[in-house]
Length: 172
Image 1 (cartoon, helix red, strand yellow):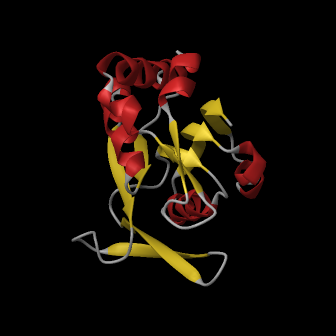
Image 2 (image 1 turned 30 degrees about the vertical axis):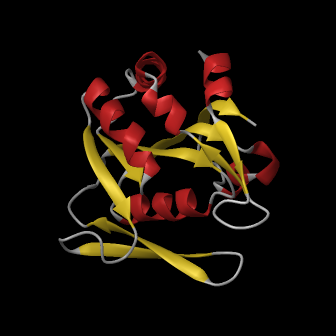
Image 3 (image 1 turned 180 degrees about the horizontal axis):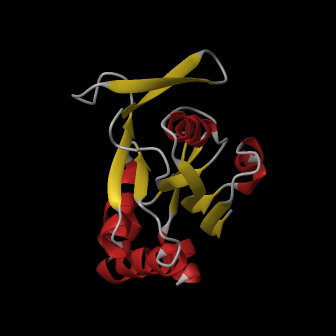
């Protein structure tokens, strides 16, 4: 499955801006067998960890977090950009190369003692994952791990996540 995954993910040069090589996961999503294998592999890894909440990071993280939460019998929470969630939220600001950004989580989506798995498609520099981990901690959740479809190891994003466990199906 890992080699099929590697072949399916395509590089898009200069997207979303010049100098960036974007890892396009849409071919994985459009291949029913491969998509099922990815979700099954994630479920096999996390199914016995007593995860109570799977937190998906906007927006491609939602695509893996939702079927994974279903497969392991956990609830689903979503982290979004400011102003996108309709209920009361908490906000976490994080640094970008030039400036800052923020993420929000509903105040009632993760609670004290919830065992939480954070899911996204790609781990690059780790900024959004790190901010999501802080949101989970602020709500009293126990961060079990971060899991990603792809990790870009040359960007050292896992290092930014500190002592948290990081799992990825594929590394570039």
